[in-house]
Amino acid sequence: MIGRMKKIVVLISGRGSNMVALARACREQNWPARIEAVIADREDAPGCEAARSLGLRVEVVAFRQYPGRDAFDAALAEKLESLAPDVVALAGFMRVLAPGLVARYQGRMLNVHPSLLPAFPGLATHRRALEGGVRVHGATVHYVSAELDGGAIIAQAAVAVRPDDDATRLSARVLAAEHRIYPMAMAWHLAGRLHVEGHRVRLGGAQIDERQSIWLD
Image (cartoon, rainbow, N blue to C red):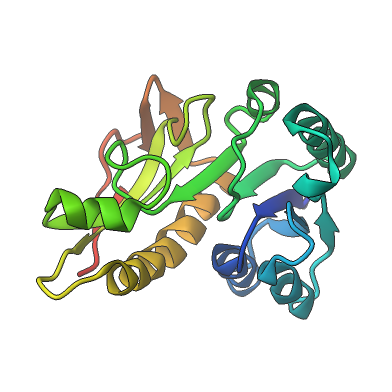
């Protein structure tokens, strides 16, 4: 018997390049899932047009249309509830989610962050990495928790920091890493291969799997 196709809802704020990477991988790799909808928190997010060009449903829950964060959080929660996703993927979504919403999708909400967490949570990760003099930077896919950029780490990709790097050049290489590991991690999740034990994620029953840590540059 063929199982039910799982529904993925992707949340974006900007250009949505990781959303595009997920959507393409979903189609090309024949995931047992579909992108049910893309939700943007801005009407003018470039990722909205990118999603439409892929034939994806786009919903907008515009932050500026609500009187405050609580009202926005309630509207976003209602929209997600109506879509009934099996998985929620944050792809450059620039809002801190309400704890209740995170709890609702615990273990089913993934995020990609442009640093090797727990280093450099939050914003301006590439500038901070350069200012900190690190020799290795990268990207992390993790389950979302109530802690900002916290949650159990699923996969990481490392890139070397080059002597001539600025934030723009470094960002481009890290973004390419994100596009590689986010679809990979999502495919593992959809296949039921990920098991969270405390703050560790086991892949296929193994505590350490070399595919969860990639050196790209």
